[in-house]
Amino acid sequence: MRGEIASVPGDPDRPNEDWTSATLPASGRGGTVVLLDGVTPPDGGDGCVHSVHWFTARLGGALTELSGSRPDLTLAEILSAAITRTAEAHRDSCDLSHARTPQATVVLARWDTGAVDYLVLSDSVLLLESPSGGVRAVLDDRLARLPPGSLVSAAVADATVRNREGGFFTAAADPSVAARAVTGRVPLGEVRALAALTDGAARWTEVFRSGDWAACLGVLRAEGPRGLIARVRELELDGPAHALLGRSKAHDDATAVYVELR
Image 1 (tube, rainbow, N blue to C red):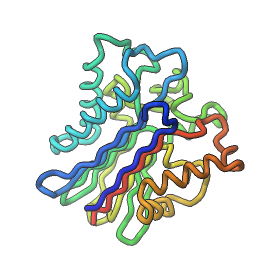
Image 2 (tube, rainbow, N blue to C red):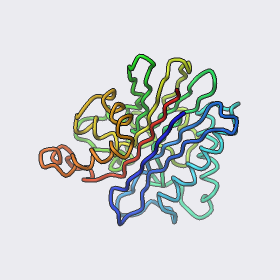
Image 3 (cartoon, helix red, strand yellow):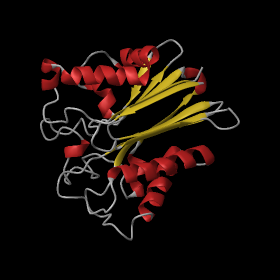
Image 4 (cartoon, rainbow, N blue to C red):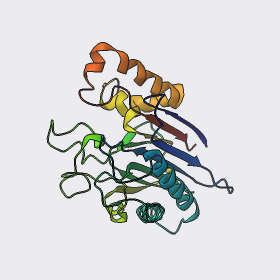
């Protein structure tokens, strides 16, 4: 297995609210990828005394430990347990019922000698490459299916669509959202490589249309995650491309993981 990770803050003066890990068990058989994109609250607070990066570190740590140590649990069960564990860590000090309580998008991948299991919640992306070179994007597209012009990203969505039927879901304090995630299983022999991207890195395809998902994975293979993020940053500074961002952040936290399984 070969893996690479890169994570670059959108603003060097602000903490990076993305979080990621890739692990390989001591047995050398199988592994896990965890990727979170923390949702930055608007001015006005979120009812929590903790920062978003505190939340993503807590949730990410729980997801990493559980996905590596509990093969008996599905990824949805692992996400549910990790949300519960994280909520208990600050329930007594914070208002977890607040619509803006710290939350994150989630990508999980776990593989063993037989299959790759995956989970995607909200607008981060998982790419699966087949041995023939075909690339499948696993997406939770509920945010993208909201009425055009109503919002730009999870960061600016309001309480009428966040974690509600007819809207979209993120990992916050309610473990039941794990059942809303996009999940699946693919035989290991059908996956040559995989990649996980927060939306700040996925802009290369989703916003700037510089290439499809197969081309994006090709950049990751040739230039690594840092190379893809560098391309995104160049596009963000380009005049015509910058206009495509509309009301979204000029530079978002950007994180990418690339793993070759064979």
